[in-house]
Amino acid sequence: MITSRTHVRVARPSLDLGAAERFYVGGLGLTVLWRNGEPGPGEHELLMVGPTDGGWHFELTRDPRNPLAPSPTVDDLFVVYLGEPPDAALVERLLAHGGTRVAAHNPYWEEHGVTVADPDGYRLVLCSRSWG
Image (cartoon, rainbow, N blue to C red; front, side):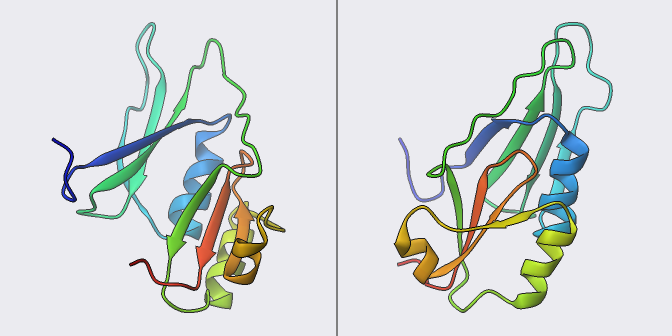
């Protein structure tokens, strides 16, 4: 049964796990929860990032023999509800760690936050609203 305590993993391909780590760890402030180092035959390179003791994490993957190019759309969003306007220093840190400031496709996110594309083109929204 799915409950509010169910853990969630979001998996995405990445062309450059080092760049993704710089963005999500150095920029956003998440923690490396696990990485597989040298993948064996038939295995993918993996990087898992998320909040320490959180109920969710990103699994970023790369097949070294057949890399899958990410194909994000303008509506593939990872939204973080901050409950206050995004700190300018956080936005600058994301940009310094490989992010690109982009206009939101949906005017709601433009009105209530800041949108930054990660190195693979997926969009992170720092939302000024609270969840709930």
